[in-house]
Amino acid sequence: MDMETKSQLSELRKQEHFNQKTKMTPSEAIVETLLAEDVEQIYGILGSAFMDMLDLLPTAGIEFIPVRHEQSAAHMADGYTRVTGKAGVVIGQNGPGISNMVTSVAAAHLAHTPMVVISPSAGTPTIGWDGFQEADQVSMFEAITKETVQVPHVSRVAECLRTAFRIAYAERGPVLFDIPRDLFFGEIEEQILSPHQYRVTKKGFGDSEALDKAVNLLQQAQKPVIISGRGVVDADAVDDVQEMAEYLSAPVATSYMHNDAFPWDHDLAVGPIGYMGAKSAMYTLEEADVVLAIGTRLSVFGTLPAYDIDYFPKKADIIQVDINHRNIARTHPIECGILGDAKDVTQELNKRIQQHYPERKLNQERWEKTKERKNEWIHEIENEAMEPGQPMNPRRALLEISNLITEDTIVTSDIGNTSSTSNSYLRFNKPRKHLAALTFGNCGFAYPAALGAKKGNPDVPVISIVGDGAWGMSLHEVSTAVEQNLPVVACVINNEAWSAEKKNQVDYYNNRFVGADIQGPDFAEVAKSMGANGETIDNPEDLQRAFSEALQAKKPTILNIKVDGTQLAPPFRKDALKMPTRYLDKYIHLDHENW
Image 1 (cartoon, rainbow, N blue to C red):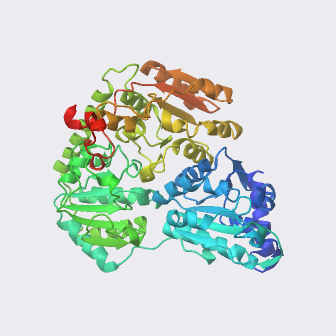
Image 2: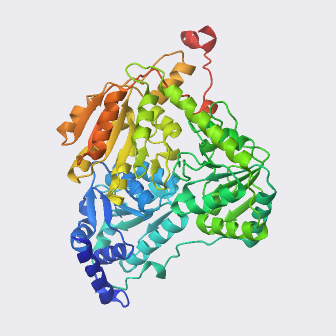
Image 3: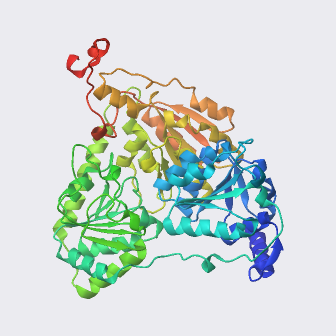
C-alpha cells in the first residue's frame, strides 16, 4: 500500500469514528489505536492467539514483519525506535512466543527505548489450568518493563493500549500490554482518540530555581565539562548542547556507547567515556570542576575506571539533567538536579546563561588543549591498529570500517571483545547513527537492530559490527533480511572464540580455556545459501574493497572477517574478578600462587 492510499484511509477512519463512539470489535479497536499512534510496522512471529488482529493489518496499512526468533523482534523494534523516535511494537504467541522476548525487552528497558509489547495470554475461561502455552507473562516482565498493563474487560481494550503508549513514551521504556486471547473477539462501542488527547510529548525545562543554580555553577566554573547522552539524541538537542559548549568553552564527552550524541568533528568534542572509550574524554573529565550531564543516568558501568584511569571526578559539582526522576543522583552525588526534557532544559539554560552573563567565556587555550588531546588519542589507537596480527589485527578491521563509513551511515554494535572495542573507533557527526547493545550486555542485538534501523530509515546505509559468538545468536535473521529486502551489511569479526571471557581466562586463569573456543561454519557460505551476499576476508586491502562494495549492494551482505584471536582488549570488569585461590588438594595446582 503506497503512502497516499494509506493517508487517505487514515483520514477516512478519522471521519468515521475519531470523534464519536462506534461499534467495532476489540481487534479493530487495537488496530485503530495503533494507527492513531502512527504505527507502521509490528515485529514478531504469527500465532493463533492474535490471528484475528493480524488479519486486519494489511488492510489497515500496518506491515507485519515476521522474524525467525522472537528475541530478534524486540531488537528490531529497538533499532527502529532509536532512528525514528517512534515507539516500536512487537507481538508473539502466548507462552513461548512472549517468553522468547524476555532478553530483548530487558535490553530495551536498560536502553530507555519506548516500546509496546502486545502480549496475548491464555483465554479467560482457562486461566490457571496450566493449559497449552499458558504462562504468567505479567510476572515475567514486571521487572524489565516500565509497566505491565492488563486488560481486565473487553470494553477497556483501547484504553489499556493507550495507557501502554502513554507510559512507554513518558518513562522511556517498554510496556507490556497483556490481553487474554479471547478478548480480541466481541462487540464494543469505542471512540478512537488522537495521542494528544491522552498523553503529552514533553516535560518542559523543570524547576526554575534549579536552573538558576546550574547557571551560577557553570558561570563560576574554570573547567566545565559536558557529558551528552542518549536523552540528548532522543530530544533532538545536539545543536543546543553545541551552542552551550561553545558559549562556555566546555569540552563535550559522550556517554557510554552513545558516540552520536555530539559531533566528533567539533573542536570541543573529546569522545566517548566508558569501557574502551577515549582517553581524551577521560583526562578531560578527570580535571573538571563542574560536570553538566545532560540526558544520561551516568550508569555505574559507563563511568567505571578504564585503562586504569579513575577518571570520573570525585570533587566536581555535578549538574544532572534527566527526564526520569529515578535517574537523578542514582549513581553519583550531585550538586544540582534538573528534571526535564533535554532539549527544553538546554535551551532554557542557554537563554539564562546568555541573559545573565552576556559575555561569552571564550577560552582559546581550552579549545586548543581539547584538540590536542583528541589528536593524541587518534594517533594512539591508529598506531595500535597498525600492529601486525595473524591473520589481521581486530583493531585494524575496526579502523578500516570506521574510515569507510559515510556521515549518513547507521552503525549497530553488539557486545563482546571486538564489538566493544569499536567504542574507540566509531565517530559520528550526526545523531541517531550509533545503536549499541548497552548495559544489559546481551549478545545477538546488533544485527536485528540493524534490520529495524533499516526499516526505520531505508534511504541510508546500515551496518552492524558483530563478533562470531554473537553472530551465532542472530545469523538466522539473514533469512529475514533477504525476505524483507534489507541490504544491511554485517561485519562479523571472527576470532573463533568468546573473546571477552577468554581474556579473563588469560589474565586470571593462566590461559586455561574452558568453553572459550568456537568452531563455526564459513559464515560467508552460510549467508550465500540463505540468499545473501557473503565473502570471507583476512586482510585490510580486501576488507576495504569488500566493505565498499557491500555498501553499494542491493541485497544483504555478510563479511566474515578473520582476525587474530590473541589480540584482545582489557577485561570488561576488573572490579568483578579476583585471582583464583584454591584450598582442596586436588585443585591446589590451580591456585595463582602456584603458577
